[in-house]
Image (cartoon, rainbow, N blue to C red; front, side, top):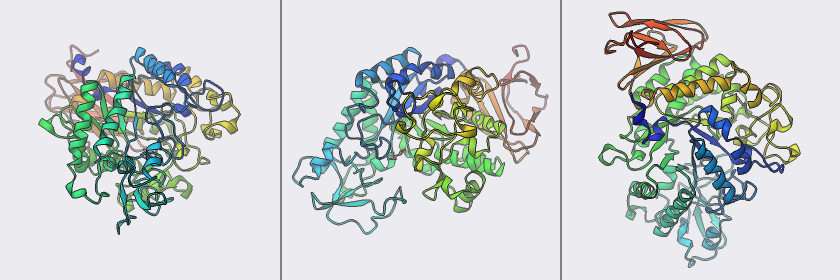
Length: 556
Ligand code: NOJ
């Protein structure tokens, strides 16, 4: 496939990298990461092959939900820098060919936001209708609580207004009323502001909750919320044609598909949706050393509209949610990867990173990232994954996986010169601490995970078939081996062994059009496909291979 076709719909072959400026690099020695520090680290991202940085919330905030409780949508948290520092970072990233998107957290605000302060002051205040109120909570007020360790209801009584307000998440995060045209206008203004300052789109927080109008007493009379999402997308495209909406939608596949929108089969709502189902099935496959759950998800996963794309990930900043597995399946993953109660969260997830879950087995860790970059979908990395950082269970709740970036073996892992007590969180020690796991050492070590990640990203970018092609899960005859092929003016095949023993599989490859030589892309070597289309491929324990079908004369 010709690479020139990939540049307009850049997100389909992007490498997204999520980070929180607060935990990335402190330039001022006050213990907080900041935009100036982040800008200084841009070449780490560029050499890794990142093409798009996703910034976690960096807005002024009381920081009770790590910045997801915003008090000013038009500002930068002063601890992280200024608007000027933000713009300098975006420009520097651009210079390295990296786009920047940020979280758009507009399902709710902080209860300290001036809008909410006004809203609660009286029922007649113009901001009152910016939030969702009821005189009495509905009978099912506890249904759908997201943080069951801290909340018992979605509705909280407010003294000022004498009413209850809706909060999907914590009670200090009142939900905005997106049915109110003034709120819609303001959200558009917020997006426009940041795009004007250089952003190429947004990771939209909690999309189904943002759109939901069920809390409203007059829900039946409100317009279809998907029309609103389409309006928002159209507005964004008018302001910046290349901008994307990457949505957090953790629902079964058919429900998630609706969030891409469907006008003319092109897609007019979210540009990308995270594949939460595929991610959860992957962990079940890893736990069982059986490819079937993941293969089944790949077969069931609906094709997005033409310009839409799935976004794939191994870990993110939240708990590793396993909420879409059955109780029994979830327990299997808990038993395999997080058996201690302290590793588990909300009864549905794990507050761990991958390397510890896999017992530090580098063969297995490498294989999982090979899956990430070869399965169809835009890969999204969470900072520190590229060097195999671990969690620190001493940190509270989900913060266990949000510890400072580990740059060097030196004090505070090179993140900050401040007193450790002033850092945003603990720094792991022992096997996964900065002395053993850091960027500086891995840069010099060709066998490091960092080099493996660079190789995977390089090959992924060279194989647009993986993103653009039609994919098929192939029959391997082995329960623990997953093989898939992607075709689009060329064929790329990836084979992954999920088990701790070597294996040889026989694949039948029809329609190769004379391209009967398979060239290994991760290591050297070639394998001939026999005239009847069969080929035998051997795999090491937890081994992986990427193969391009080539014409015998063209094979290199
Ligand atoms: C989803 C985010 O991923 C999570 O970190 C946050 O706590 C909630 N939304 C509330 O904003």
